[in-house]
Length: 230
Image 1: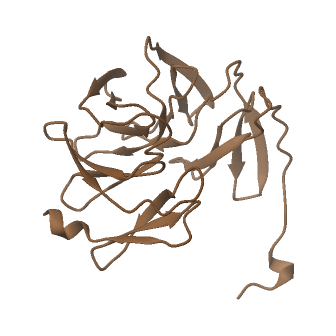
Image 2: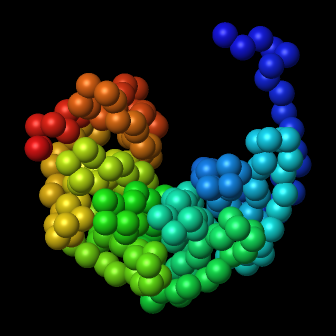
């Protein structure tokens, strides 16, 4: 177990929160260059951490709140940021620390983080009643399916061994499985164990064929055997 002298703080994160809700950075993504890119939630800047020397550098300029709740590394080596309240789709190029806007949407998909399908497309988990998929090969965005909910509902997702994508339920009793081969959506009920906003906030896949949903306001974790769907 690490002793106290092996745990230390480093760097200076200087981004200013654009809105009162102070959630400056949400998640980090490891790039091919080994650096960690911190996604700006309400920050006006991106931050990149170099673990080789524990240095922190900033880049980019953002004017909207909800800039990128999470992100995902695409097969082309770029990091695609979650598309939240701004409706602006962006990617980071770690090769030169640039931020590129490639679409401004007429709808707000509420994408939060994402999962890369076996075909290389990015399926954004989010707060909409429909799914959102990004094709990094040509930077197009399309919607699909009917999730049957709205609100902060599926904040995280994970790729299953059968190639389908499981969307973790958050403020709903419905979880969803997306088949990227045909963009079909299958919904099923799970317990809603929360007493406040959000029962579960993401989760992890185990080695014994199950998903463990991490509690948010719930008083217990939830185990789901995804092999029952294969």
